[in-house]
Image (tube, rainbow, N blue to C red; front, side):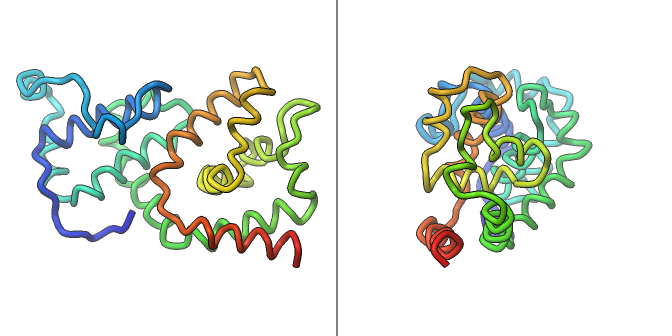
Length: 205
């Protein structure tokens, strides 16, 4: 998710369909943005009738294709309920969320390292995912704002723990977070081998 790339070739309608695809990706367990190449059912005529069409026109002029995708990702990841996100909300607060995510990505490996250091300072790695008594510590830490969704997603790239917890937990809170992790994970561009090395250093010294 590198910013300041060359301006893209998305038309205003393309930006709109990207918004629809991103929303479906983050809210529909069966839809995959990559599998369907960001395609959804929509029409140019319906788009042209929208009152907020100017917003998509402005984005197509201002941002590169990658930045447009990142802009929408930032808005769907920042909320507890992606299905409640609508264009009006993105118009009002989207720029702030986009800027915040851009800053996160500038120091993603560092943040991952610091958050893992905090997590492993008080417990062993297996304990983070222990759900014998309910919500595992890793989920509690996230809900308390002590660990980011990015770190949860990177850890899932390393351990695939969401699939294991899905089989053990029947809980709407976990189901919501698990879906967000799975949907967000493919968009996170990070050197997983480097993250594994960071974890080994914490575990084995």
